[in-house]
Length: 293
Image 1 (cartoon, rainbow, N blue to C red):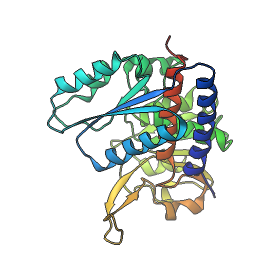
Image 2: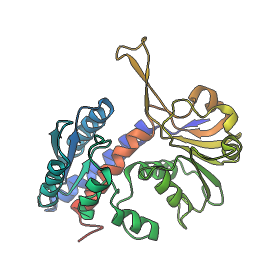
Image 3: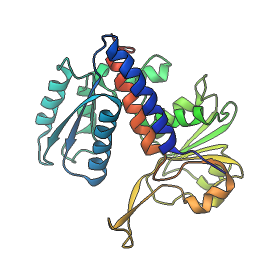
Image 4: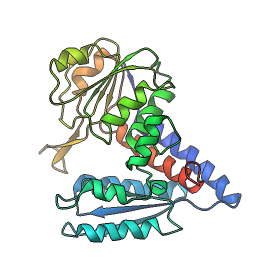
């Protein structure tokens, strides 16, 4: 078993981006600027946004955070989106999810200018990705692809099973893993809450990507010997032994599953850190106008 260490890989990627940014700015390029809209004070969202801001500082980006109370109206959030769309200094921005129930995530996402949609959620970017055209790839799938590349994991002809069909991870991941490219060329099965014989399907996976949001759901008997296991789940579980009062768990029961795998990601310290690298990479592409002119 080898660990796909998100901490080590993300640190390497951030160092690479920092070096490229320094050269870009020294050559007269604009300092990349990432903004974020945060509604409410969800603990996981707060942690994630704070990590993004720290990462921006580390690699030489500018960053802006627009905060709103959970009672903010949808119209006010749309106004903030339009403000960032029209700000020439902001290269890319995200609207941190989840949003309160009274605000439509689809309405907000579709209001973002695709050229500044560095989360890769806008239908234009999703459609371009499906067509194999240049696009901002969703940050988490981007991070997973980068892990596979840097570990030199062979994907061609492999059976990839994706557990979860969210528009943020499961769906784009299934599309990317079957494309005629590397990583890709897999035979992909996408599974979800209505899938019958889920355990048997998972047992046939050469590459198993778990993105369903249920702590420790995937046990050793779901995994075949030598499989590559990518754990996307991040769930807070009450843990009185911790100072914070909770532990962070993935979708995979790591201690149970790890001995059977060839490669596995830990939680924390795995895919989550790579997601931020995907966001930073997309923002730098936006600053350089690589995707949209």
